[in-house]
Length: 514
Image (cartoon, rainbow, N blue to C red):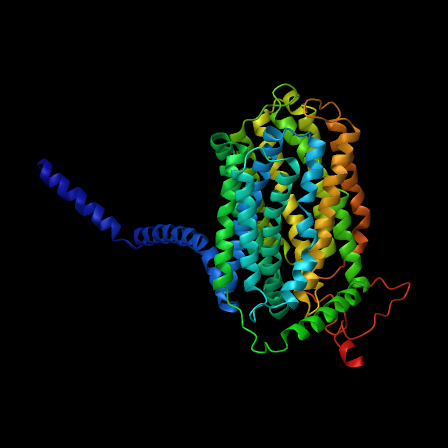
């Protein structure tokens, strides 16, 4: 038998074996496993797009586009880019002490504290029959002009530079309060999608921040801190365009618009005052303020220490941006964790858990400042990225339930104004945190070159974070999809008894009894 005959017999035997039932089943099972793996990977890739399609089918597509633009580009990219570049601007161009920078940055929150004013304007004062679209245009023009001034005019006095940067923040705040009014109304009308809307906001914000942080160090290095600020004039252009494309029903009654506006203004102010007096409203609002205010900010002291070549690790500009970019990526992970596993947990339970982890994660900063990571054999570059990831994930898990809780406290009719009031309270808490941290940094003599007591500042901050756990009783026990206020809250008087915690859900038959 020659070699060709042997090869033929081998081929026949292989083909005969492949035709046996067992072999067929094995091959088909392997093929099905590979197909399932491909389908699973493909479905994971398609899941975000299917989610967006679902939201667009239940809500207006231009509204979803507005969330992506405002939270992704305006707040995510601009906010993160602004944070890094302005830090270097104050440090390298204006050469200001870290405690003073904390006070200056606190002034950035003034436009955010004024959110109830912007909310009143968007709810009450329509322009050409529109209540939302014109304010996107105003936000874009204000932010763009302010960014161009601070970037193109050299040797600016501190006061004028601060005014321009506050103008940039004002543009962001006005655009944010306008889209938040749309979100609040949709959250009331489609309650089941409220957590999804907040997840979309958080994801877009984190994705934009990832891009902003990733590019900030590069542009600071090549354009300088002042030159890089010119990029902040780009997002306002898109916000201006949004004002012309977002869907909004135009009011047809314009003849008595001014008189109706004043009447509506009075109703809105009385409605806010009446609503905030209810225990189920002011108690969680107080908790949100105190949880932010008591966690004093030490950011500027740590930033100066990060870049100091003698006392600190002397991180480069590119690496500073890289640290924050990794943190933004971690924030996206935090959004996914909340969306997949935590959005059905009651408010009090999730905020208690998140605040506890928030205090524990702060100890990583203390370990880093004291350089105990080097004693443990962990390099600075690795440890700071680990610390940033952990703190960002926990911060996002802690923040989203507070926003969902805020939407649950808004009465229908003044939802934009009242949500802006709640966000103003949060901004006031952040302002208190910044100024409180600045005062502690100044009191303990933390300067541009002296970081001896920086560890003590961080220890005080961590103790205050743990102390916030004692205020958790102010948060309602309700689920995140429950209604926390009665639908007729603006038409009935609050009945408060000393023993009433005001945190339980409203009975379904209460409206009939009133």
